Length: 446
Image (cartoon, rainbow, N blue to C red; front, top):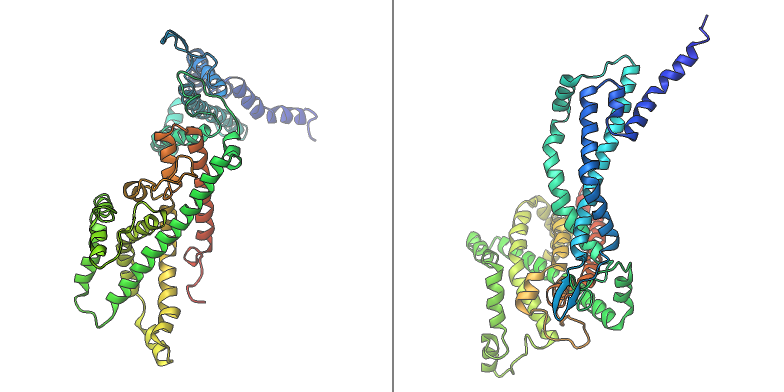
């Protein structure tokens, strides 16, 4: 016969894990003390008390600064600072730091609640709670990998996540010159106003859409020219009749071995319209001087040429390895079937090379969207375009962002453009990676 008191006892017992977790929710460590884990519970109680006594004020101030970005304006009298006031950017950075720290504390708080619940569940199931020595041993054995990862996680949060959040949040403020630059002026949250201005205001929208069109065209041309030039030379070197293959590969790899910084500056002088060697040679054969760096069309043409010179050796080296690994039997079978050289290239060589290099091709395109070095070193974004705001005819998005920040103090607009660049590159890369057969687990030839 079942005792009438048994259900009541069972019901009371089933509530103990919930009571333990609620005590930990009320104050960290109380659930552990309830589970008679006195050392662990006491440490958690001391930890939360320390945070509340010494850090609750700074955390609250940091969150206040993140929300308000300051309220006290700097006061000046006769050109001298009477009262310093709040520095909005410092408050923003401090607020992000304390917010990240608060997230870590909340995660640890949730862990303490879950730990109290789990331990109490084990006790109700007949598993005794670990004492202090057992808890240390358990933490060392089971949590060793987390101890190793903890410094990396902390450094990642404050050296990667912090700058990333700061750059994103700036886009939602009016942080720009000349009227919203701390410490003289405060910065305010403006929501999506910067993004709407980028598309609605004529001076910004003309620049943005003009620059983004050239950026996409530049990335396509820069990627295609280097890729197919490298493929062309690798095919020539791979022909049986060509002698001294190693020598030719070494010669063609030299442009890649020379630092790009030096090569770009040399080409900048080479294409100089006034005293550059190229125009001098053209004059000798009766061709008028071409304004290579002064005309938008010729400047873009020269950029593509120089980038091809710098980039094709990489694809040459890569494709030479791909071509040597293609089974010769495929070509022999195609030749027996009467396929021409072009048909063999179109049906065998190109598909296999594309299959092997498609992921790198996509990465190269994404890299060219952000190819700041060649744009800045070769043309500095010029020539001047009077229809653009703070951008030249050959500026791509990344070089325009550089000018907006370091030259014009338009930090909020630069941040908004950076976010849009990230979205464009991320969407394009993810979609293309998903479409490449190299990233699908299926046979190469179906």
